[in-house]
Image (cartoon, rainbow, N blue to C red; front, side, top):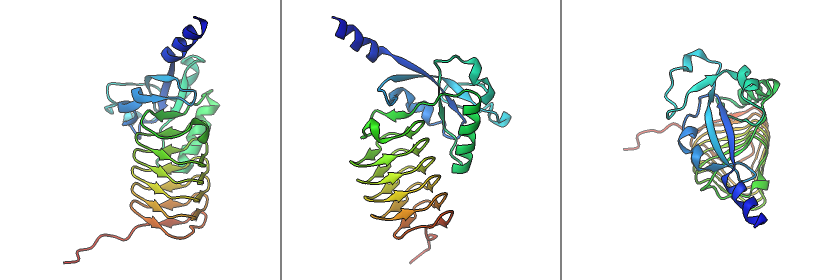
Length: 223
């Protein structure tokens, strides 16, 4: 009977969370289908944003309940998810600001994602239908949006972003603060240096040096 009570308590446990930033309001649409690294379901309380221009944004019925400095008023049991990813430098900076206000971060994993919890670090977001193969390590505060695939034996550093439908093939090494635009494709064995930016739909066939940017060819009429 004790094991049953413990099991039911774990199943019914809800972790209260707030989302910092409103750059990806789509998270509010599927957060009810997510769990933390410890397999707990989450309850979204609302958003935190310091930008007054965002106060009127439509956020699937949720409200902006305060700014970053209000974290300390929410209670010690509330966890924070940083959704800011305009640039990885900004993501890192806002994470540090949030931490200075007492934020305790949690990761968010969508129920449809194929991934082992021990593969990812603190504060990361793993969206719907993400596939993470064996031997992969993903660092802290990363963001993998819907439909991203990561091939076997790949390592991804801290504060990295992969847009919708990104494909990272096997044995790839990605350093910290790398931005991969939606639809980008990284071929096997490629190394991408710190703070590099890979544009939308770009195909990476060779190593990319630190802080470099790579873009896809612009479409042209062929007939």
